[in-house]
Length: 203
Image (cartoon, rainbow, N blue to C red; front, side, top):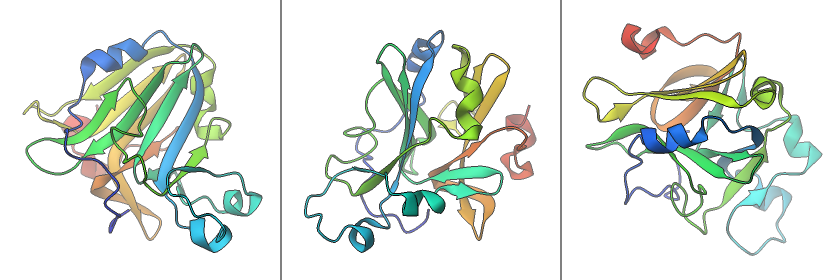
């Protein structure tokens, strides 16, 4: 989303890290979590006084997920992947500057891509249709698609068995997928990569 609160950490750039991506290969996923701006915190839970991430459990919120769009998911802060042996990998975006794009690290999103006290809504999307295929086999590829400059990564491709999930730098504008410097978009089959991503990044 645009106009985000300053909860995303940018002191240490989320440099695309092929080493950590390689560590994910061979592991099976047990849980997938989206971290979005907590739009409903004070409306639905005015009694909450503490700050920090909040796990979304209300059926009312799940009826209209803030991240769900036609053909793609839009994520404000980042994504956590938890493996069946308890390892946690995080995917987030780097604030525009000398380095830009998607970063992947083997650590919790909180404290790296997200401030500890950030008012984030945490959505457990493990059982959603888009991610179901990646739970059926170990991750066989976690490909950070760097641009020729070696300093930008607009796309991450995850493959497990016959399933593929694409994560790109993108956002929703009136329900349409558009480019973004500060948001992630998740595309699951049969969704196709957008033409604006560029031919070199759509192979």
